[in-house]
Length: 223
Image (cartoon, rainbow, N blue to C red; front, side):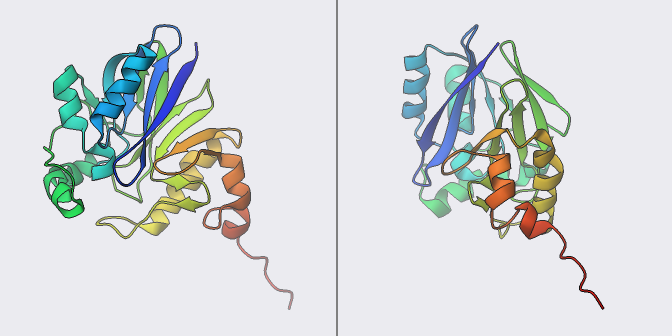
């Protein structure tokens, strides 16, 4: 079994909405439908995907803005994020006004997610990792057989997520990355919420915020 994925940049923030599906059954899911719903649905149609659910990493407007509209249009359940992001979901209408989006409705996920949960997309299984720091309820989805992770705004190629939003925390974000993501393996390719894909190994080697060199404690000076 193989999980396939395509990335559709959406909203003025160019957020990486991911459409994933089973190569065997073509059952699929949309991860982080932030907006531009017509572009998302066109890609679904072009690939012949049968959507079964929506998955959310977190509830910022550029990741969750079209969630309720897509759920209602296709009758889809919403899985994720972690319940600590409920206040961000409740603030979606305000977020839309602040950033010039079309009016957006808040919603209640069909299923909240937590560390150690799994989600199914057809015959494929994704592991769930709770990775707070950017938002308190942020989760990451990982396909172990495919060595592929969808990390939202936790980690980027050459950077990390912002922590200056309400209930963001820099130290917590670093712990999420080093405790939850790095142990998955240097060979894992990840799709970030913005920008190009990378691997955990590449970021451990070169990322100016979370590379092993940056985070390794300095050796004590000799007396």
